[in-house]
Image (cartoon, rainbow, N blue to C red):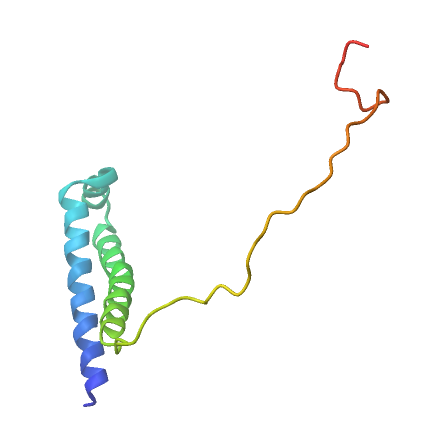
Amino acid sequence: MPKLVKLYIKNVIIGFGISAGFVAMLLWFNVMNLWGLVSQSGDGLLAVFLLWFMNGIVFAGVQFAWVIMAIAQKDDGPRGGTPVAHRFEPIRVKAEAQSGGNGSLNPRR
């Protein structure tokens, strides 16, 4: 089996393990009365399974992405941004006051 497939399967197992821990903590701490809802419903086990499975998909994807990004090669060269190509200089803008027409700021006229 290729190394990448082995890495993927390993990280999927880790992601679903994290999901199991996450769902167990949700039930243990009774977040939003989740334990009460699950234990009182006839479909509670299905709800727990779906919660575990859907979170497992997310956590497995994040786990695999994290590992793939961590094995990227690091550049040893300087890491600079785009050099500044322009100099910004302030310019004068002529502002003229309006003379007594409709633009007056005094509302008591």
